[in-house]
Structure formats: C-alpha cells, structure tokens
Length: 371
Image (cartoon, rainbow, N blue to C red; front, side, top):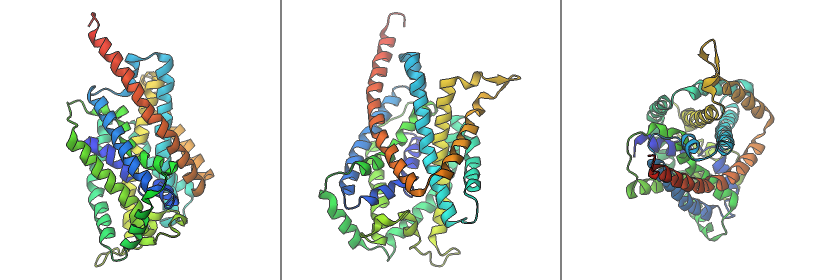
C-alpha cells in the first residue's frame, strides 16, 4: 500500500491519544476497559480490511461517485450530507479539545474565541485545496512531527517514573465484562480508513493489501492503544486516574528532558502534537467540504464567472465552531464525544451492507450487454 494510505490510518489513531478517547477509557479503567480494547482491535482491523479491499476494486473512485452510479438520487444525496455532518463533527471535537488544552496550559490569558479562531484560520483554507495537495501537506507535517513525538514516547517508556506495577495491576482487570463506551471510543481510532470515502481519488494506481499490511495495522493499533491507556496509569497510578481531565498532559508533565534547552516535555509535546491535531482537522473538514460539494453541486455556484460555491461551507464551519467552543464545558465535550463514538459503532459497520450492494450493482453494470 502507498505510504499515504498509512498516513490516514495513523493520524486518526495518534491524534486522539490526548483527546477524549483516553479520558473515556481511563474513566472505565476498572469496569471493562481492557477487554474492550482487545475486542476493538479485532473489530477495528476487520473493518479496516473490508473498507480497504472494497476501495481497491475501484481505484480513483470516491464513495459519492460510486453511490451516484448505483443508487437513486433520493438516497445518495441525504446520505452523503449525513457523511458531511459526521466528518465535520469529528474535526470539531479535535478542534475544541485542543482549544481547551491551549487555554489551560499555554495561553490562559487569551480569550477562548481568539484561540479557536487562530486554529480555524490555520485549517479552514486548506479544506478547499485539491485532495492531492492535502495529502502532500499531511506528509510534510508528518515528517516534521513524527520523529519528535516518537522520541517523547520513547522517553515515556524509558522513564524511571513509569511504575510497571501499576500497569500490571491495570492489566489484571482483563476478565471483566466489556464496556460499551470504552469499546466505541477505541473503535473510533480505526475509522481513519473511512477517509478513503474521499481520499481514494488520490490512489489511482493498483495497490496491494495482504497479510503483511494487515499485521502492520494490528501492531500499530496494539502499540497505540497500549500507549494510550497503560502509560498514563504507569505514571499516575491506578487509583484516581479517572479524575484526570487530560491524562496524557499529566503524564508528559512527569517527564523531564535532561541536558536540553526545554526541560519540561509537556510544552514540546503540546506544540508538536498540535501539528497532528491540525492534520486530523484538515483531513476531516476537507472530506466534509467534498461531501457538501457533491451534495449541493457547489462548483456550479458562480458569481461573475468565478466559482464561489466552494467557499460557502467555510463561514458555516467557523460560526458553528465558535458557538460550540463557547457554550461547551470540558465535561460536556467528553460526554457528547462519547455519545458520538457510540453512534459511529452502528453506522460504519452498517456501511458494509452498502458496499455489498454497490459491488453487485457495479458487477451487473459491467456484465450488461450494452457494456
């Protein structure tokens, strides 16, 4: 598979390490979180495999294009609009989370609207770029930030402050009944493959997806979930870990960088992780804009022969983001995020039935006498 495919998978996993996913997991640390993670790995890898193999059959084709060929207009237009809403909300969760993080740890004196608006302006115009330019932007930022983030993870694993007895204690709770909220939060990490709904237009060449590629995703998912859940417990202890609003912030603040300009790892972690958050929002909102362009045919909206339609979703995105960042509290954000993840568990596996229908219609179209 192309390296760009793995970017879509990795960014969705890594970006949520300090978002609401670890807070949800650690809230249920003694109530089935461990077994929920294991089940989510099996279900998530299966979903990634099915999604990937489906789009490999149609190189360069997006899901809206396939729906237009195989389904009626009364179905695919509302459905694609629903996808736009889901992708926008996914990006919005990341945006609000990092706005709260910045105002709490880096810029407590700045107005929250100003911080949110700064993040939005860094992302919003990238949403209307062509898909290939978005992918090249993703690669550039990944090359810059990934080594430093991996180094910070290495420092966490090698730190003397990491108590492995706490990790073993947490692992002992594997025999509990799975928790639904924990499962859905972990399952969300695997939905990076769903970005192929739009980004598959970038993959025009024939790709190979076999056992080695699947095992690589399995290893990455195990490493990501283990790091997300067990490392904060190892630093902060098993009891009371669910009281932390941002477990990974407390974790990185316990790490020191000896013989370096910046001793506290927290500031480096936040700044470089901001790059990953930027990519996550960019990917989600770019897909949302593309879904809206397809639904409302925004390319046809012109003024003095200039296409202004593609800009119409942008002020709506900005207005909604500024509204919710001012009315939501951190507790409400985590609670509503949990509900959002719960809904996605039903929607995205259910799309496999839609893929089956599309495959049948496409086969009938290819085998018809007219073709």
